[in-house]
Length: 412
Image 1 (cartoon, rainbow, N blue to C red):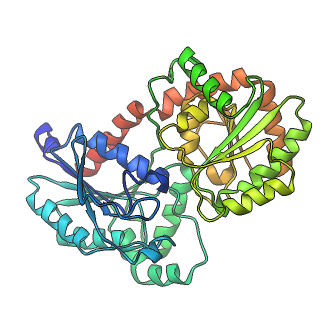
Image 2 (cartoon, one colour):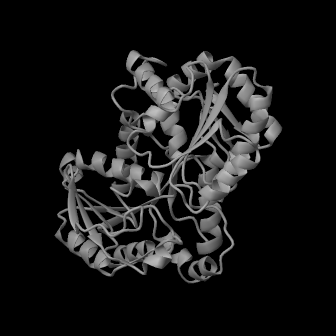
Image 3 (cartoon, one colour):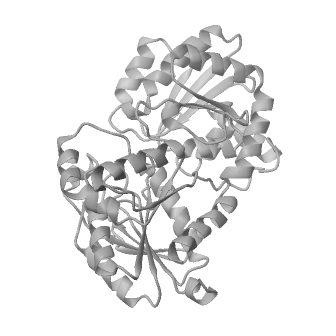
């Protein structure tokens, strides 16, 4: 494809939620970055999304501009269902997309990140209306795990096969997710029509994170500030989890492991549980109290842009989800701050274990504690390796060039 045709590409995202609804998690953050990257190169970049914020209030601005990215918001129908992750967006999403495609002077890449709800249905119709002009890219973002749901079964019976057969390229976070998509596609549509590419998540870090050094003066200043705020000593060993406070995130698993680790560790230790309550915080806090861990386990809400400071103040990121949600964006962000990882296979992340930047385990309390103790005894070596693989594989500048290669191979 020549340079002129590249410049005339329209990059269009359809998403149930988008900035500034950061509390909905990693999908919002990653799609935001993809759109910003696309705006550096392509003629038109637009996002069509709902008007729902992460606290389920309505965003009043029906259009917005993030850099060079035009964001159009349409009504989310039935807000009660959206709280249960059943997202039904107004037909205005579809009509706005049709208008953008018709006005495009070149090919259109439609990028989306959810397999169920009105968004993928609109994507299928758009692909069928403009078969030669539209290319469809799907990022799975850990949404391929099986889940018992009559509503999901009904939706899949009528729509999933058609959705999968109209996707041109799939971006999977790791090999496990890629194999899950291939298996799902063969089962639902009887054929694998998509090109499946493993494309790990990435992170853009604040300026005070020195990507060439495991620690810097500014990094240490941010860490000291957070530890002082939380009344945690400089020498304490600190674990951190960041994500939605939901049963599927394996928060009980992490608390159980920390409880046993603390009894074996000779020094002072703390566990920071950071995230937006998704209906589970009261149960987590009650469990912490039952185990008499109130003084060493902190549950912290409303941490968004300053989350990197909390990573810097920590020594080990932990995540043990009970479902295959694949790579956690927060684990990538922590890694890029030089924090080693300890995650279960349900949150697998490439390169971490093979290059000694942490562990990916079959979760048991005993195995988690063994790994926690090993990191606590070799903090600086694990930190050094975490920074090395973050710089090599997960920083946004490296990911951006791969992103463009994937899109342009899809358009050729």
